[in-house]
Length: 178
Image 1 (cartoon, rainbow, N blue to C red):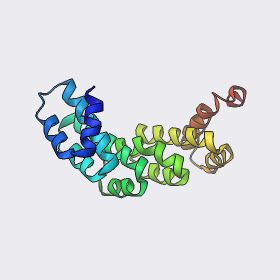
Image 2 (spheres, rainbow, N blue to C red):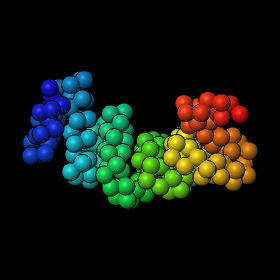
Image 3 (tube, helix red, strand yellow):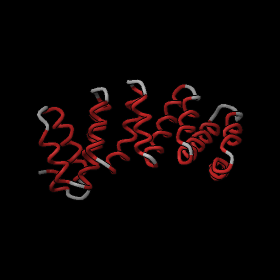
């Protein structure tokens, strides 16, 4: 019920909706309401959604910022990528980038690869590479396989092939096993 009321309220008077949520006592209801406002606000004013998320604290801030930029990417990929380019390097930027991979890959897989290359090497980057490979395999299997075969680093090639196999498995289990 709160979600549907907030959705309409954010559309008509985002400032009042934000003020109401900020006055709620800390807890699950406030967190859920803040998530609703950020999601709705990202559709009409992405910069305001990001500012609201950044005004929060702790893990909630990270979650809200990731949500805001991810929603922004679905509406205006270039705007979200411009914001992302201004973020300082680190865990939070990697989290935001990883959450955007679906939106970017569905629009431009090569751009998604370029973004993943900007991530700090490690588990988060590997997960993002797998995700790009998996998604790309569903839309253009030949291009995904060509990308994997271009890799000269055996470890990276293995990460990408793992994503490709996971992308193949639901539709072509025998091919995935080959």
